[in-house]
Each structure stands twice: as structure tokens, then as C-alpha cells.
Image (cartoon, rainbow, N blue to C red; front, top):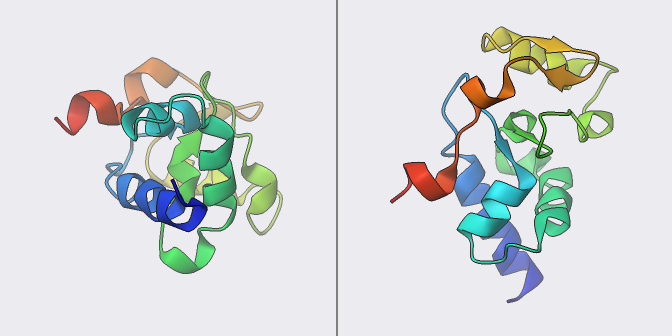
Length: 108
């Protein structure tokens, strides 16, 4: 799969994450049939600023804001999530399972 094409597919899925919900890099990769490509999904998120993608809604598999250093300011990712009603403490989403959106289940 060509990298740019894969990135575009990642962006399409990320744009479907509902307000107030989050997903993981791995969940997007698995949904796209590339279960071992979570890191590549992360790379896509790092390059998504100009694509109007809600990258703040994509976190690691246990709800840690691993991509936060790619946002302007020290806590912008957390602020964006909190604006959607998601509580974050010590760079981790509180009650992650409650907020988790699985594209494999939701986009059947």
C-alpha cells in the first residue's frame, strides 16, 4: 500500500471519530486491514494538521496522549479533549473505555 494513500485512508477514518470520543492508532490500523501499522497511523496523525483532521482524538491503546508534543503549546491536545468533555489526568484519558470509539465496530 502506498504511504500517501494509506495516510489519506487514516484521515478519512479519523474524520469520522465523533465529538467526545477517542480511538487508538492501533484501532485505525486494524480497521484499515493493517493491524501491525499503528506506528504508521501515528506518522499520519503527525502530518494531519493541514488536512482538518481531529488528530487530538487519536491516542495510544491505553488512552495516553502520546501525540501531544505534535500540538502547539504544551497542553493543547488535552485542552481540545477536555473541551469535548473528556477528562485527562497526567496525560491519560480518565475512563478511557467509556470514551473509546472502535471503527471496526462503529463503521460496519
